[in-house]
Length: 166
Length: 286
Image (cartoon, rainbow over all chains, first blue to last red; front, side, top):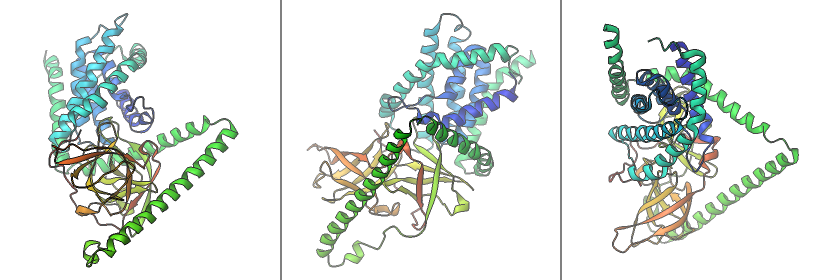
């Protein structure tokens, strides 16, 4: 998939995340669409592309967020990089791996995010955030990951086999 | 081989770019770029918001259901208005009683009530993260908005302006962990700090042991610190935790504002807040 498609896709994902997704809360938390897209693409195409997708998605999220600039970008780069654990193995029946990768990726994303927020001088409630926000949202993202992964796989089979031109 | 090596360097370069962006943002040098990009994303957010509201309307197919909802809304608005009026009257009564006991009340109660213009802003976006609680408004510098201005609705305090662009602004909600507001209970005048919690609820902390905080009491801004006008409604105490060995009491507060359904807010432009608001000295959000 070319960069000309990746950027609009991820920007639209970030705008949806800042407008519609927060209205769809379950148990007080909402899904993280850009994170789900980056994890799915990393699993399909490997860490190298996952990192680039994480960078672009993170920039878009940072522009729409009140958090310090770079918090989402660095967190999503980490997610894109670390999702290589399950790289190329999710096709077929290994759904459990997708669920586990997404669950762990959400925790990594949120912890890196909070670390950057704290470095920038803002107050962070580590334990409260972990118990009341991070773990529930990790579970929600994991449950939703097969849907987003299915969409990204469809996109990959239709458009992305030639890889992304850097 | 060279291309392979270059591709291996990509993650490092991207991390470096992100770090440079972080540093430039801290130095305030990204503001012009942010403004420029926000010009593109703000209409997109507005359009998305419009779609959300229109889709919401479409789902209300039954006419009688819509009428009921309308009637319910009217009653809720009326109820909110009466609640506010009632609370204000009680506040006036309490204050009058207090003032009778004070000789030099003018020093203790400077005329600091809400005055000046209000700017009505529509909520066009929310923070993309579960961990932060901000909203984005469609009013900005061009409308006279500056940092730290208080934001309210008819039901009470919403937050303060944390970032301003030409045609947009971002509001740090009082439910965010990094938000602190000096507060006072209505009937017993117990003072404390309202802090947001990770799950979006509110806690009133640092209530002195000798003060009486009781369940059901209404909580207002105290005006201390000069970051918010006084007497803005915040919420109602639902639980009080008092331990003899602790220096302070802690209370759980139910906010009067429905933060999940904010659509239109008021920015108080007639109030001049102190530039840096209260900081959390302990850094102990829960």
